[in-house]
Image 1 (tube, one colour):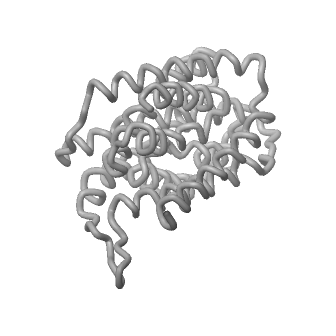
Image 2 (cartoon, helix red, strand yellow):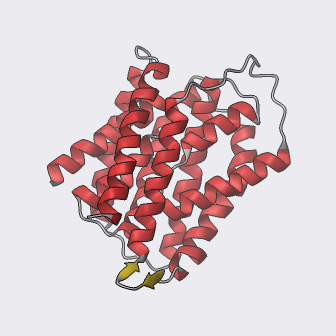
Image 3 (cartoon, helix red, strand yellow):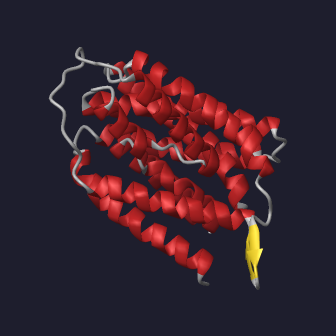
Length: 264
């Protein structure tokens, strides 16, 4: 199972490099089902893995001029604050069990996995449907600051709860709210994901999570191999064709997790 898990981590990085958003949604299921990591702890590992992997992936985009630093700052600051606060103050106080009724007990790990499965379903819909196109050029960026601030807080809170990067939410927001071209939206999204995930992970350190650093670094190394390969392959494979197919896969995975956690 560990061999399968490390292969899956490469696939996760590969998908993140190829499509720019949605790939990190696989990290928590890989950790939970292939490495038997506790769901709550897996969200902490996921923040580090996704953050480090996205940082490596954003480097090639930065060199190509596809990272818009001002937008990363405007969107990233509220998102960073939100994810750090969620990991340090909210996640530790979620009760376990969350509630119970009759013979059914809704535990904290179950809450995390159900919330994660719902997020996967939303991510899959975002990837399957055709994105809205924008004709704006890189110099024609107009910021809707209140909306971008609220979107940053929302994405940061979601990232903090489930450990996913939230690229499937960030990229449409950057295209529609900031007017970035798609290539810049992907590169800027990776930079935002990297910063907020890594800083959010420090909230777990402050909350006293027991971290297996050796395992986390090895897992990250495999994922980084994947994202480097994915970033290279984007020169030859358009993500417009890959994203819908990956979206259907994520949709099936989301229903699988819901069924496994609630029915079996």
